[in-house]
Image (tube, rainbow, N blue to C red; front, top):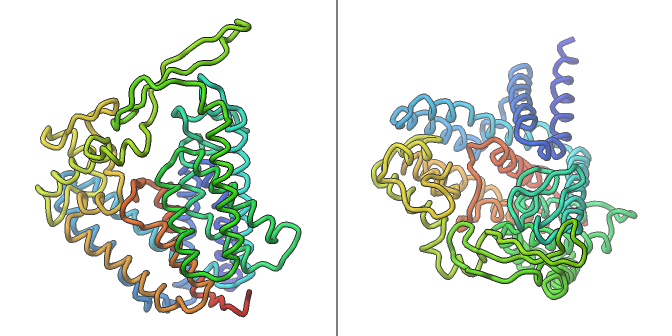
Length: 446
């Protein structure tokens, strides 16, 4: 009976994990319940088997040290209860990544099954986003997706998420799908042709999504691929060139690039004011216009960064850190600290006085956990990075390096690690990239 119970824990956890790529599309609630259950079952399994070999891993020790640090610095937070609450439940992310890499995905067949499920969901997201693109309307922007969801912002894709995140989601997992193409024997679904098509449509969709940072980090990953990985390099290049051609053709011929005039262009939030033209509803052969405020052009933001919303948010965060250098304002205390102290507010046109979080992992940890928490986090990442570097001999293990760089590239806007949807994706990626190393894929597999 005891042996069955142990097996059942793992079987249920594997089902939850394999369903995670699908449940991530539904929102944060179901995935959060799933990873919490997986974490609890993993700890129960470790107790039942008295198997704690994984505790010898340096990155795991540093992860737990980071968590203890979060609990400690919370005692000095502006809102101690809120910080302690967020610190306490943060442990589920770390345990989840351990469970993925040292318990659930320890067999190559199971790992590849998971990657195939992940691939199916990514392909579905691509198709759904392209469906929105094909339903473009001059006044409404990208149209409804297959489920009837409309994008929340003009000029942004939502796909099936009911939020403007498909580009960043694809960018976090696209290299795992490419990895699957390299380790899977050629079939009608997995061959050179479909790999090129997948790469081209992934890049094209990320560009369409309007998420500049998602596109930038994906291109960074491709650049690293060209430098470090020999296999399928030509196919990745062809896919990238096709995506570039698709982007250029869309810019030249698609109506969305010709049905407007620019009224004003500033680097501020929603700083691009355009006058859109299109057919009037219920009025044949009549042309109507509509003023629309949307996100500023990426080049405008880069050239005038000190006037952008990102600069204003980072500046507020910096002021908070100056007043709380060692322990920060407390986990998830950024917004309340801003609202309660006029010193931390800056004029953010079209945005509001305060942001929910600093929109950068490193700045958030520096602001909310101070130098102490920030250094423990850097130590945690360093231990993972060292594990990757020590096992980077083979081409396939280099995918872990690519995914790590895409995930933790410092110069980009991000979600909040404390928000369950983003946090789950980050630690799922960590679990997967460590699994690649643990499974010891070698060049002979290719």
